[in-house]
Length: 83
Ligand SMILES: [Zn+2]
Image 1: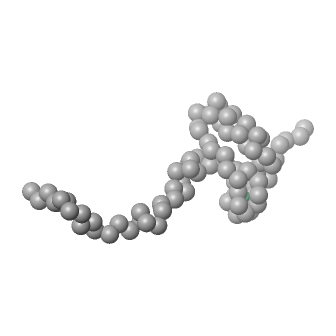
Image 2 (image 1 turned 135 degrees about the horizontal axis):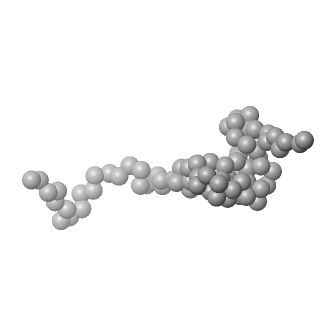
Image 3 (image 1 turned 90 degrees about the vertical axis):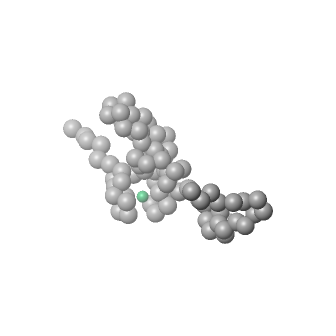
């Protein structure tokens, strides 16, 4: 009897998939079997593909520098509403 024993990433301890299609298939299976939506992303440490519960697009939301620190705008006509 042969079991599929997935290798795990030494950094994230996640199951390693060798290509994106394989990982995507596992993600689809998870959604079908458990109703758990998973996201596929490529690991920067081991170079294989992992699944994550969180949407990586949301996780790495990049905020441009000029929007991080907004100087208090003193635009003409701007009046804070004090109530
Ligand atoms: Zn990894």
